[in-house]
Image (cartoon, rainbow, N blue to C red; front, side, top):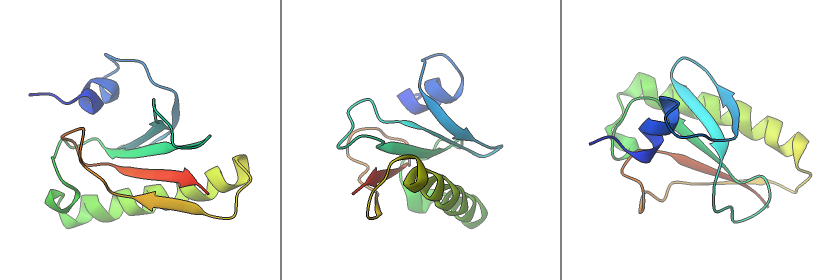
Length: 99
């Protein structure tokens, strides 16, 4: 069954996209912990982050690094917190939160 993130990736559900490449997408969280809270999501639909093939995992981490650097410029903060929670949506993703 498609996750809500797959529907966002496929353009079936709107999002506020802040970045995208061939393998990953970043968009604002709909229930942000703080202003600028983003999700970095691989386009491959896997339930948990460690299920990604190594190449896709590294692609997501490099993508998240670029997004986090841009986020720190866009939203003044001391640091960007990153979290892998995986409790609500059965699609691997990484939270980036300005702190």
